[in-house]
Length: 126
Length: 126
DNA sequence: TTCAATGTTCAATAATTTTTGAACTTATCG
DNA sequence: CGATAAGTTCAAAAATTATTGAACATTGAA
Image: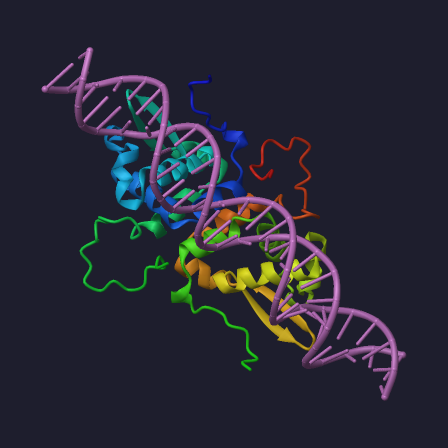
């Protein structure tokens, strides 16, 4: 049995697949949290995202993100350490991830609410 | 019967909806063609995109793009004139549309093949 | 070793999205 | 007027995606 998780190579990452993968609230929330709290990869395990859905649902969504080439998943013991494939995405679709993340910042629970008393519109409501 | 087509206001446009709408090859091709050949709105009718699907399928996809706030549809006689909501999208999600369009340039049939003999990778294969 | 934690897999179900063809509306053209 | 062109609507069918719970595998810890 192939024990290593499959990750598409940079050239295999396609725009339609990436957009489809991100066109889902749960997955958008995952990458948004990853982007903000993921500087230290050690904390970003699957169960970190349990507030977003059941164990099985997360396994499914994380698999989608991985297969689309958006995140990297590194098994470590019984855990999986997740990280954004920032560089690969930037090379493939310049500016794309940055614009998404900037717009998605308010999506993830526990967002660093920018201490703004006047929320304006954020474009992120379902 | 409300004869005017509904278009979400800028504040009603949400990132998940936009991403979901664009996570489809047909719709990505539509906006890519619109971006490249749509400077003159007069030519961009629904039937212009007939190479991408049946009449009914296009009606469906164009409706999706409209409801997501990505395009504007103006009835003119028996036709519908389509245009990208570039400004609204740029205000809402700065840099997003530009990055998509730059990456999607090769998607639409009849693309201005950039006269490049060495295609590299384009990230747009299905 | 035994227990608990972290995830995956599978099959079934549910929900959503897409595609189709037929019928229909509206407007334009001769 | 009568025919054609451009689209829409509707309901049914097809296809895809997402959710669940049960069972399982692996690793780490007591």
